[in-house]
Length: 565
Image (cartoon, rainbow, N blue to C red; front, top):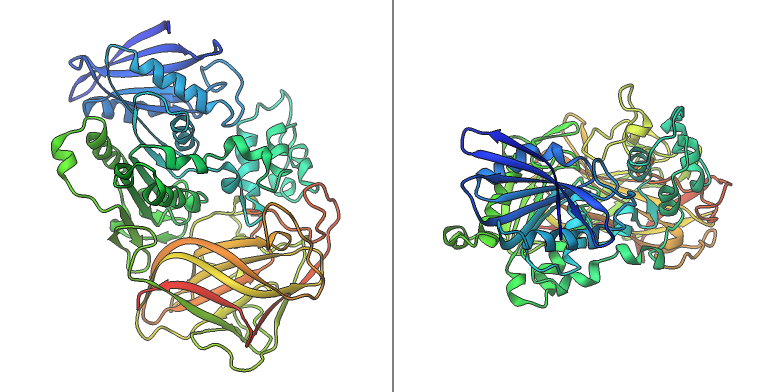
């Protein structure tokens, strides 16, 4: 393909003279994408590290120069329709073929050794999987951080949509008409039907409407579901994510698929997972929301990537000879890193902690208990009223953290646990540390008096001073209790067994701390509130649901933790 030279500049570093060349790379349909090439003048041919981003390629200048100093040629590109690139931005729509075309172009350049790697996180991570699924010649390794292989599973969990995430992201990436003043996001997130959220924000956003009005993983999402294609890839992958990241399930799942199901036996041995205590914006850092995890939590992600690419792009003998653990995971609480051969790690077994009470588990001052002993006789069920007009918040609202600014990371849950619409089950103080690692779930026996209702579950570590740190959370929309593919209304008063996925987590509950489970009808606005009518995303009505959690022989509601014996 021909290229158009736009500019040529020199950047000087303490280690090397890095030449930056800005060109336009044409795609198969003639659209040209703005692309920066960073090279050390002394390097005539080398492996290439590629980053494709919608967030402005020039902001990657620092990392690009470091890769060039490390003996690579770095290529940074604006995705279609963003910043200096031509075309129209349609989220993820063209990234597979544009990634293929870009890598094919790179491998034809005289300065490319023939081996290309990709790196970056979030959207910049997803484009790696999309390009890889097209099998471009020359793609030899990727390092996706905190991202998906199924976009549906990123946007939805248990049938509930990650509302504030997708609404704020699309609002920030959809051109705002001149003269329009954005509406109050606190108000917009409460708008019904969901198809009107964009109007409440202030302007039309077709992609937001589309994502919010397709709550089932049907054909609408097919083009953005690559999961079944991952085993076909013969590709070393460095997977990095945090427990508090909304991509945690997807990223860990991608690692598990590649390590266990890749058709190429060598590829199974070329997967690595780094699983830390971070949320989406703090990967590699020590402070996450309100919790400081200590110096041990710090990770140099650039060094991890260089090591990975030295192994698989340079094929450096010394780098390839260094052993590495397939899984390196951080244990919260004791704040240490541990190595494992797989996820979930071996040596842990499913252990039940039963929900108990005398029917008054509402608030942290109620009678809810969490015990290793199952109830031997019937106990009164616990009930709460889930009001869509006042949904339980995902985290406590404060003067500096309005409802729209709810965070995924760890914050003190105490204020939320004082709400009457939250059931709270707390263990006795630990006599010795409790260590667990793996994928967590809650099995609940529930009922409601409305056609639909949500059950949101949090796992919490309660310190002796009362600080209640959320460790993991999950949600299930009642009408999707049997299948995400087809909604089935609840029958008022009928009891159902449901399973709520709380995702991957590892922690040690210290001696003197207490283990706690919170159950509510919402995690708003991280997930949309359930109107409880069962009318779906186009419904306008709401109903207050009385939700029940049952605990008795034959209906043992419980938390299931993978504990170390």
